[in-house]
Length: 85
Length: 211
Image (cartoon, rainbow over all chains, first blue to last red; front, side, top):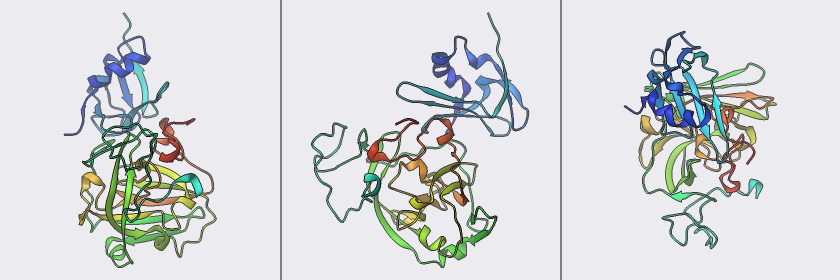
């Protein structure tokens, strides 16, 4: 198995967002699956981080880290429901 | 030379690069800036590995005018093939020298294709895409490769066939290639739309947008 679960996104997303996004509920634009970001299938042995829907394998999140910038592509995500403290 | 990126060959010894400060390189090996020498062949993947059998495999070139050119595996095997020995450079900073491939030149595949396109969007089984100027696919710069180091290309490395464009960062050498869409206007691919450089010349260290 070449992927790990969405908890692997925690560190990189924490660097960008003030809250822990792995507990947010995301909706896949491919199949409509709703589930926690932590349930995504994450591929890290790549030029960036690719998170795929555990239901249909659609790419729901891509994160590329440059030297002084990060690119977060969420076109595969319909929405994120984020619990707030 | 155009883009300052000589097509590497082990036939000629590279010149010494005294300013290079990477790790693990021999003193007589010149690598693009920021690269280190890999002894193994790392496997990078953005998703599940597609398993495409050669009886189902097809390669398609679609033109900007909607014309379609198809090749089955059998038809690909009947085309003249070349043996290529080249250095490859991954944007994740490893380089591998003197890799040996066999494949069909894009010059052969594009020979009868009528097009006014300037750009190509390469498409793979599994949904991966990458873009590059059409001029970087011709004149002996690119191949559909189906053998590596004397063996069939394994699925992990893009088999049954992958694109090989060694003068650009290796993400342009799309694994599991299934076709090329020819375009009048540039259209960013999978990594190019997520922060990576549109062109990706390793000798100019074009890793990210703005480099």
